[in-house]
Length: 224
Image (cartoon, rainbow, N blue to C red; front, side, top):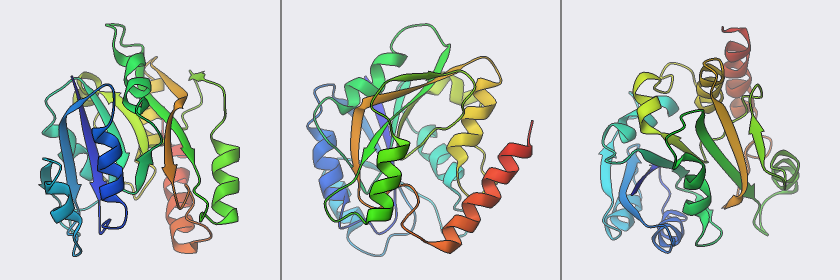
């Protein structure tokens, strides 16, 4: 039994495709949570058709880490999949590949993240970044703390004592991974847990986003 937490803000274009793919998984997700950040389009109307539980977070209270923590608080299961609402699982084995590394009692693996692939309309800048960032071979990371919550899974039991940082403005996934690796856990990169991500991980050349991410990464690099 697994849970899934999906962050969403005005995702009417993508959330239906995302949730249809989630519902087609061979390893079923019996506990689906949408963390809604004051969407003003039909995001919630679409989400309720898929029996999702809705957790609201205001724009004022929002941070990427706080949104995830609010969603995970309501989860019923030990294995929690994390997905952005504009990411679409490529096939019906997505949940299996994200979960299998966390199914034993060995807590040495704290998290798993999967491959992100471009769509035909993805810009060349974003397609390049996705293809060069997400490799074709599986990796076990014992010191490299790259991690990406657009397509990932974690153990709830470890999250309870190690929640996501709610104060930094982005890349909460890498900050979390650095902390857990520092406690002798490992991260798995699983290339067969695949999603389509139309805008990639850098959102083309969005300079305000770049500055925000650089500031957060600088904080992570200087911490601990």
